[in-house]
Image 1 (cartoon, rainbow, N blue to C red):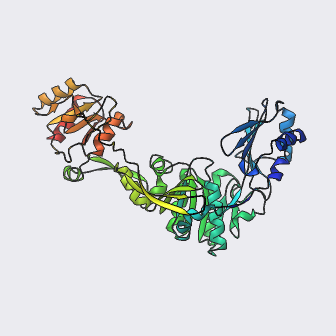
Image 2 (cartoon, rainbow, N blue to C red):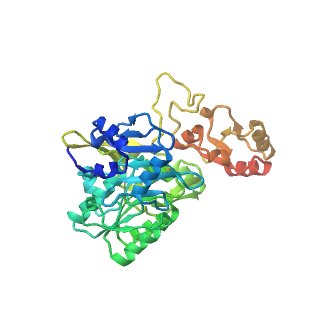
Image 3 (cartoon, rainbow, N blue to C red):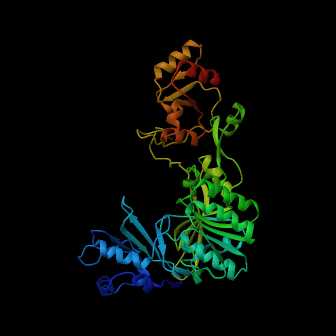
Length: 449
C-alpha cells in the first residue's frame, strides 16, 4: 500500500553549510529513508537511515563555528532543548555542556504519512479512547497526527491537539497541513502540559483531544478527568507494551491503577491464589490499547480492563495481531501474550530445573492448610524450629514438587523471582514474612493452621 508522504526535506537541509550538502547529495539517498542527521562537536557528522544504517559524511570534524552557524539558523530552543522549522514537522534537539553551550544536535526528519492509520481506523472511528504504545521511532506520533486529521476532516469532529514539543503539528504559529482542520494548542513549558489539557476541555469544547507523550502523574490525572467528561482521547505514553504500563507507577493510572488486596482464606482458596493479590482499582482511562510493532503491524487490546486483569492474575491475554501486506490487505489473527506458562517437556519428571523453570503442571488446587512448605530465602532449620515450638505439624521440604505452599520474605517477593512467579501461576499459595524473626514465623504458621 502506498502512502503519501510530505517531509519538506529541503527546509531541514538548508540549516547545514555547503560542504555538508555537497557530500549529502553525492550519496543519492532516498529522502524517505532518512531518519536523523547527527552533528556533535569534535566528530564527523552522521546520517541515520530508517534501516538502522549509519553513514559518516566525509572526514572533517564538526567545529564550534559549524554548530553556532546551524544554531543561528534554528533561532533558539525551548525549555526542553527542542526547536523546529516553521510549517514543517522537523525537530532539532540540542545537547549542552555544563556551561549551557550547544555541543551536539540531533536533527530528526518529520513526516506526515497519509493512510498509515488505516490499520486501526475502526478503533479511531469508534469513539473510544485509544492509547498508542511502542518503541521510540516506531511511528506513534505519525499515527497520532493522521488520527487527528481523519477525525477532523472525515468524521467532522471538533479535535484539539495538545502539542507540547510541536512534534504533531510542527513549529510556528500556523500548524502543518498534516493535521487537517484540527486545532492545535501549544504548550509553553513541558511541565504545564496537564494544565493545557484541562484548559482545552474547559475553553474549547472538543469532542476529541489528541495528546502525545503522557509521562508524568499530573498528566495521567488530567487524562482521566478528560475521559470522565465524555471526551474521546487519542494519546501516546512511554512504554512498549501494556504490561510495561502495569509496572510503571507513574503511568499505571492510565490503565486503571493497581492496588494490593488481602483476601479471606476462603476467597484465596476459591481463586487458587495467595491471600495478597494485585487488582485493578478503577476503570481504565483508555478503553483500548494499541501496541505498535511497525507501520504495517500492530497488536490490539480491545478491552484494556480485561487485559490488565488477566496480566495481574498472571494469565495469558488474548490480543488481535493485525498485519498489512504489500497490497494493502490487512490480515488479523488472535495471539496470546503475557502468559508465563512454559510448555510441558517430554521425558521430564521435575517441576523445576536449576533455574527455576517448571516443566510439568502443578496440581490444580491447594489446601489453605498446607502440610508441607517450601521456604525461599529463609533458613529451613529456623522455620522448622518455629513449627516445633508452636506444635505445628508442618514439614519443611527441599523439593518444591512436594510442597503445598511457599514461604518467602516480602522484600524477596517484590523482586519477582521466577520460582515464585511459576508457583503463583498454578495457584500455589505464597506466604510473606516482613522479616525473619520468631514473631513473624509464628504469625505465618498460625495462619496456615
